[in-house]
Image: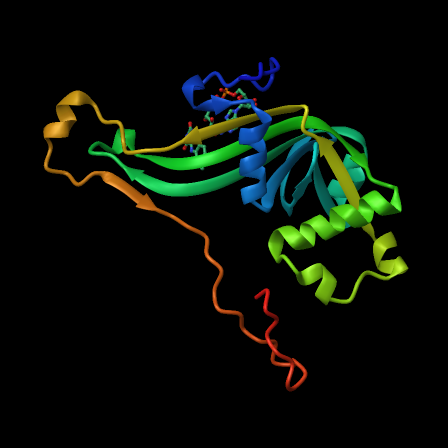
Length: 209
Ligand SMILES: Cc1cc2nc3c(=O)[nH]c(=O)nc-3n(C[C@H](O)[C@H](O)[C@H](O)COP(=O)(O)OP(=O)(O)OC[C@H]3O[C@@H](n4cnc5c(N)ncnc54)[C@H](O)[C@@H]3O)c2cc1C
């Protein structure tokens, strides 16, 4: 297993930790929503935002006017967290209730992506991560739209993963109790697409949906 840095080393329940890029990447690639933490004027701020991983970076995007983007672009230290919740873990005692999850915490310095090729690659990755096939189908960004969109990247040099799986872990004496215990799986599913009321008549639902 890859060695963690001092600030990524999981202290609480270290058996659930992993620092290998395969584990980290698999979790990142299964999600699309992260929480971006940064400090502004000594005030910690945590903002939910979309992300996409491409190779060794996590990319973030937003309006060039957004505070998170403007704060991040100057090499600000950030903490980026991704959380996937897989189930509710119902133990026999309330104390041992838990959740099954896969999560990643990344520490790093954000930097602005200026090169048009890398910027477009990142924006394509956002779109493809959420809806594969969409980028090629929808109208591409204009020069003005691209200018108004800032893209940041955070290197995956300092990342930790933490994963909980399996049934509850109860105190030995509690296994005798007549209380149901187990896991209630939780999943995020795509629903049936709902057409925009202003959809041009006769526009078919794309195959990729
Ligand atoms: C969906 C979900 C719900 C949770 N609910 C609770 C809860 O209710 N109460 C609770 O105490 N804990 C909960 N946890 C666990 C929580 O995320 C922390 O791991 C735990 O609280 C210990 O925090 P700490 O700062 O003391 O960890 P430490 O072990 O001191 O953290 C040291 C370093 O380990 C890494 N690390 C810590 N936690 C994680 C993580 N989850 N994923 C990736 N890297 C990590 C970070 O790099 C961190 O800087 C939950 C986790 C998830 C994903």
